[in-house]
Length: 437
Image (cartoon, rainbow, N blue to C red):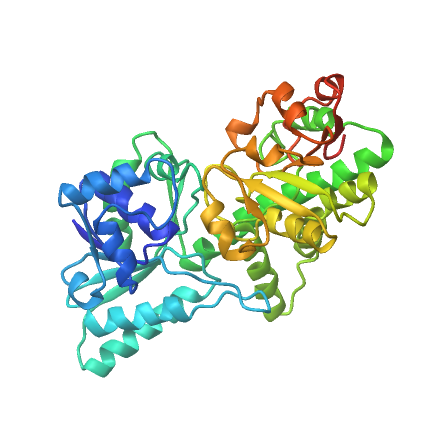
């Protein structure tokens, strides 16, 4: 079986590599020559645990190819996945220009029946726009080549994407013909040995499923952040509350950990896009609007705690920041709370020293040289007035607090993910501030 994946970003590269892993002949296509050349040399454009090893293995075995030539690469393919970016516009809508440009190119160059699959997260109705672009390009060529469109949203967690793809809890596919369904079943058969289902549905429902899933998870996070803030006001402990409600299997214990807000490439963009889709169709997503407002406010909660302890003038103060990426096990800095927090500290005159195990090079695109990038987590602490834990990387979970205390100018910890035990840290002589505690 031969397929093409257009786009070598997070979704496209993981998708193409995992299909190659089960023996499918895959060509990953991108317009960025430097990125393609790098991939051929084993240089990854993103960080994802296990991805580099898998890419190198499948490239060397001849199952995984990289190219900038779409016209050549899609010849004789049964399926072409569109996995290019859909950046949010200023109004929150998803920008489809890259998706539709790929659809047009496919129509201009395909030579046999093909299922054209949108893998990018796209609003309801996008598949029909893709279909029109492909059909228009074929008509302009004066050829009548049959094709189908399908929607196959991804549900990959950054930091665990390989496992999520190889052992999915469900695969959602929107199709419009039996032939397309049979091809997609054949394609995904190797991944279904764990017994989890492939759920076939109409194309608009598949497109909506991705937005609904991410928006539901974002809602849980913002709800718990609101509860955490109320806990502080009322003298309750959100960790106890979280355990109490998480034991209810209707709620569950996932995505109910309070913190400094969600970020990344999915939740912020998808929440905005679903709100905008509703507005375009005369409906207001009141709950999701509140979810977004709570999340933006939550990114400033830690700064408010800093001001409460030190005052609004932070000139002469130095803050150590542990963690920059929006979550652990990724270098993704998109919508990362750390950017909001650090910029606020800088505006109040503070100096910032930061460390992240993976994301520091990515962080420089946003923060540039406004902060000091430390060689490790303990280097950030030298003469620091406070430590801000922003991203809960595993190596930050059990630090040597004796060393931490000796290196810092004053023993103050702002724990943005509640990974430390408040009483234990206070017993060691630190001032401790958590979220909702």
